[in-house]
Image (cartoon, rainbow, N blue to C red; front, side):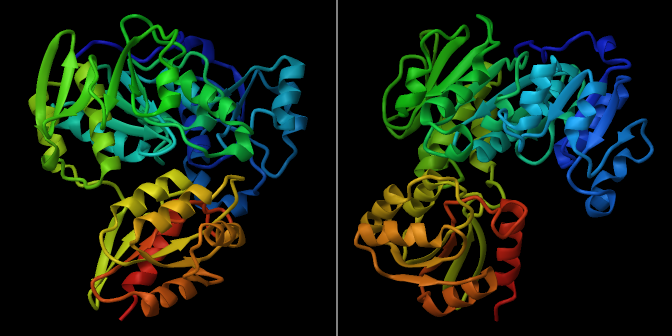
Length: 464
């Protein structure tokens, strides 16, 4: 395996540094623990009170932190050497603008963790497929005998992995655009952008801004590093120009000179004049064309970091997928129920719809990201497999209007998820499916997509 460790600062510089940690969700708690390990003084701030946060902050109670819960963070800036914001805080938020005006540097949890972790760092971003691909990569490295930490935006903070990792370990980071906004020294040995489609425009405003933030994952790479891009995605192709790392492609539909692609029904890797056959496409355990793309990306990233083809082959044949991504829940009265709560944007749900091979009742709707649903509506019509749509959530009216424009009228409404699940039970036909793939974030009714998926599965498993 190629030798490359996470870029890190002299750890002594953290001793005595006063760091205002804004937001005490999982990543905030983990980075505060990490900062304490290296002698920094976390100044903890969250809109919630200690009672509201409850046991979430229990790991910090006996550490040398300063607590300022429920207070205005603007009043704490004068006493801070550094502002560390959660991914949920936009870089144009008043607290960030005030910090920069005062000359207080602004950073994020991912950036800080990458400076304090040991091991080789590989990372990827993209609108869709991130969680499946990093999980598959973790399995590939473990199959090689490595200790691999799959961390970042997947729900396990990179800071938590940084407290455990050793120099021979691998850190596989799922990175969101929100996290990339606050990176400067973040330096993955192998990095990838899987795809870029319309998402998070309520945060980034334009597709140009969104794509530029995604491309920033490559900013610190050098000639000894590898940048992996999706040849089938026009925005990804455009990112290759000017990169310092060696560019490798993956493609499901085209032949590439350097990278991973499909030839005669087999996944092949072309690297420096060699062609290596990994396995047959039909041997990839996780189904669907989007998962073939994820497998190609993971194979190329792993091979670029020194993993032999036979190890990659084994992982592709045995990896079973991830929770909340077209996850089979149960079969009841001849109807199969699938949880795709991780379908939080239009492109992700389009991919889920395209995997359905029987009459399907589709649950759509959630919180608003200010995106268009017209493309999804057109795919629903073209697929011929979506027998009924059940709308539930803040975007229900927007989605209905898009469906009607596309000429689709088999629409029903539910106010909450218990009602939606019961309605699907009555609408589904034997031999068909029910698919939860909302095409929206979850924050109108749930804390995150994981809670949405868990509640959906609970409701489905309670049916009799």
